Image (cartoon, rainbow, N blue to C red; front, top):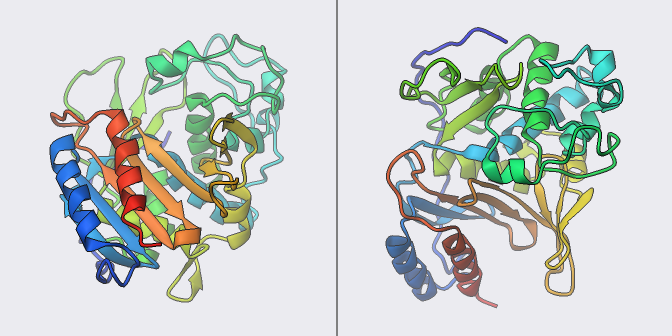
Length: 345
């Protein structure tokens, strides 16, 4: 793994422009009801952006918080760029890439998983991994229970190994790559690219205050989890980049074809309400209740980045999960309902 780095770099970029709720097609009165709910729910911030312009900005939207699993969407953007460059071939297998792990090492069957299978969380590799929750462990299949590509399981081994493959292929840290290819080109105003590394097996000291940190758990796996801290504002800019099909100020940052491919559902994760998983994005599949596709990712079940192209809307919800909070997961669903209830038909 690349050596850690901790530096303070200058803040760059400009804030997103603002418009009134009415200009975005929302009721200011109904949004006041949303504010009341946010206040009592324990949220840290909520930003709503219509067609690249902020019309609702509540709470500490410029404070950087850990984004948890939303980190997968950041990795998605970098894969799109390096797949187009020809640096990464998603059909390459782990065997071809020389990827293995600590004991119990990968089997020959597992090594046939392709990068594409890891991106879809369908690798069939159920090896211990860093940053795995108890909920994820409860649903983990037995080793070799499924062939690569055969079965969806939300799998931190896949996501962590994808980070390693990207760094192996580029020779750069994921945090440096994100600053170079995404944060700077779209003018994020808080993400500086400072990063460090922790070893949970040997050190229980507080996590350093950096924009990113590798979470190493060498007793479980060779591949660390890569965590990001980001403000609601910068996440809203990132979501707007996807809303604009990868374009920013007339420049194609992420290939449009990659965004379309990675926000196509390859697995159905909730058939009752038509939710699927694409490549590092959850997908709201069109049905009788929604005419267009949307996509999102949550973090710890309470952070959310949602992109709703049919409404030209980006939604970012944050909670201070590294501080004291009393936010409940069900409150996130209520917030989403209140947002769309405020949309004028």
